[in-house]
Every structure is written in C-alpha cells, then in structure tokens.
Image (cartoon, rainbow, N blue to C red; front, top):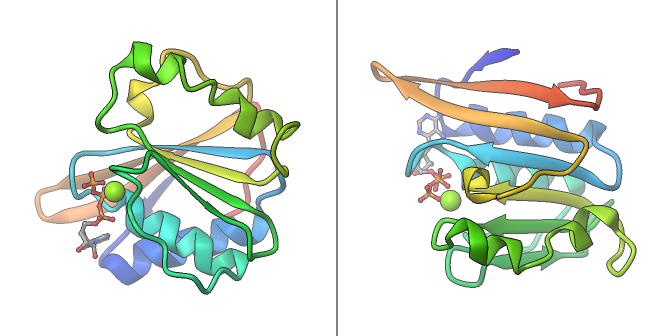
Length: 145
Ligand SMILES: Nc1ncnc2c1ncn2[C@@H]1O[C@H](COP(=O)(O)OP(=O)(O)OP(=O)(O)O)[C@@H](O)[C@H]1O
Ligand SMILES: [Mg+2]
C-alpha cells in the first residue's frame, strides 16, 4: 500500500491512524534515508496512543520507552549499530512482551536487524523528486490505516 505524504503533518497523521488500530505486540519496522520522516511517524504513533510526553529520537539512547498511553510504546533507533551489535540486544524481548508490558515496538533503521519477528509491518518512507510517500507492507499481520 502506497500513501502520499505531502508534508510532515501528513506523516504524523499516518502515525496517529496506525496507532489507533494497532494491538499489543505489534512491530513496525521503519526504513528510509536520513531525514525521511521516521521519527515524525513515531511521534504520530505516540500521539495516537495518547502519549503527551514529547517523543525524541533515540539515536544515542537506542531505546526510549513511553508508558503513559493506551499501550506502551518502545521506540528504537539502530542507526549507530552494526547487525552483530543489534543481535546482542535481544530485541525479541520487546515483541514477545513477556519480560516487558506488551506494547507497540517501532524500530528506525530496521535494515540493521540481522533477524526479524514472525509478524511485522514494514513501513518504508521514500522521498523522490521532491515528493514523499510511505510504502506499507504487512508481514503475517493485518493493518487498517
Ligand atoms: N512528508 C513530509 N514532507 C516534508 N517534510 C517532512 C515529512 N515528514 C517529515 N518531514 C520533516 O523531515 C525532517 C526529518 O524528519 P525525521 O526526523 O522524522 O526523519 P528521520 O527519518 O527520523 O531522520 P533520521 O534518519 O535522522 O532518524 C523533519 O523536519 C520533519 O518535520
Ligand atoms: Mg529519526
């Protein structure tokens, strides 16, 4: 599914809409070049979940957790990591939701992951010729945007 995103507000609105239909243990793998709008989309997800705390990029912290909304939001950014370092993080902890409260897991720079969950939403943000769009592909899961 391809969705045109004419400005940052549209990217955020897509996040809000996703947040309203996602259930616990959902994983969103975000891909897209530097500045493509990945964090903006996660800010929308946060808003859609009812999180009022401001969502900031976890480029240096790796993970930020927000527990105030309808579901917890686990926001990761793997930009600075190599795939073998990502493997050592045991990210499955987040999507299994056994040791943590089950929530929404949103991962920027998901292309750094050496392995993926069984079910996830792939969300690729693309900028071409001055226009932007999102390409959403569900893997073993249903989506409603
Ligand atoms: N659809 C859009 N059209 C125009 N600008 C946008 C759009 N979506 C987001 N932006 C803007 O692009 C800039 C970069 O966005 P953002 O930080 O979300 O990107 P990112 O993909 O997370 O970057 P990084 O790779 O550094 O993590 C921000 O100023 C944001 O407001
Ligand atoms: Mg970002």
